[in-house]
Length: 256
Image 1 (cartoon, one colour):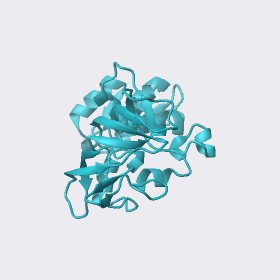
Image 2 (cartoon, rainbow, N blue to C red; image 1 turned 180 degrees about the vertical axis):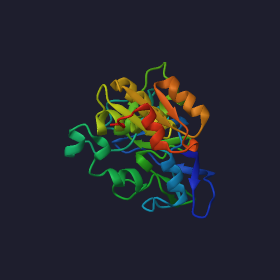
Image 3 (cartoon, one colour; image 1 turned 90 degrees about the vertical axis):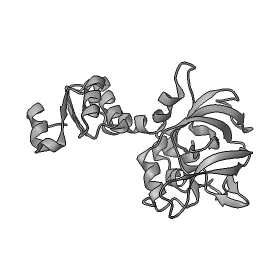
């Protein structure tokens, strides 16, 4: 099918909208009409060439949300018409996936950054030229995607797509760092440097975990205000001077 996608090519300042051909989903894939897509710094770094493993031309994007239009023969958990958010790709059968740690899948680097299927094939092309797809199993900077079905999670009807998109990476990264990777416990002190999407997700998770003090270090006043609204007990402007001293004003014994 013919779609429009934002294509990252070498020597381009920004991705450019292009008309591409999108192939059919395989047995373990789904076709999704994208409604919204978040922009992560990982996308920006991949476009800039900082993430060297990601080849070009490529369609980036890994915080997609939309409506399922078709499913492969082996897909059971979603069906056409379902509203979904698309997260990262994982194999589902390695030890880490079986332990419910898909972010540490043994195939994770390829599935996230290689921008192709495991067999090296791509589902996007322009005038016969292959365009790299499957960035984080989705490449959601497009009107439609063929995505790995395992990364699709059904959404309740009352969750707006623009709210759902950041759940795919930014929210689970910040919240997962606090609740899973670190395992913040009630009564501990916590500081986060940067109160963007990931940092604010960490703030909310720290509040849920029962942290005693939650210090958000952030240069933008609007984000500091939002951090306080979302659960931070204290905020620090790094432009004011010694950040460590400022944090210790709120947590004399330091943070955990």
